View 1 (tube, helix red, strand yellow):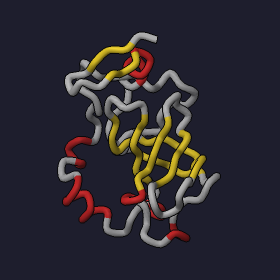
View 2 (cartoon, rainbow, N blue to C red; view 1 turned 180 degrees about the vertical axis):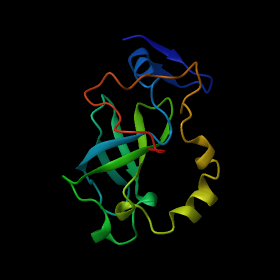
View 3 (cartoon, rainbow, N blue to C red; view 1 turned 90 degrees about the horizontal axis):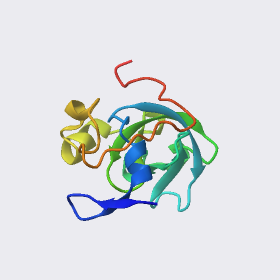
View 4 (tube, rainbow, N blue to C red; view 1 turned 30 degrees about the vertical axis):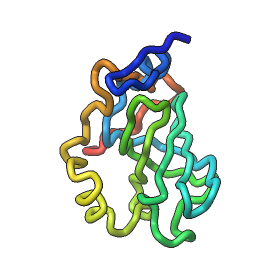
Length: 143
């Protein structure tokens, strides 16, 4: 498989590059939680029907373990971040599974989030088209 180097020096496979081009911040997918390796420590892995994995950081999940999605949970997730790593960072679109103080958290750690929604996560030289996988996005964040 062919690889190339991005502006930050990391290697990216041409397959990933060809797959994430259609992704946008805030794009919503229905996904299934497939792994909760260390509950409350690192986060959860989510299958959103693409050829790359989705991951929700524990910092975006509710504080209480019983409020977090368990393995097998089906819910909607938004693209929160994607870069040259072959993984998509997600945040729960369903407020039941999102930290209660998300607005404050977003202001502190991702203040540009509202203006990022709808934008490509990767610069054009690094972009990929993760769609072409088994499931299209359900809808944009705006509806």
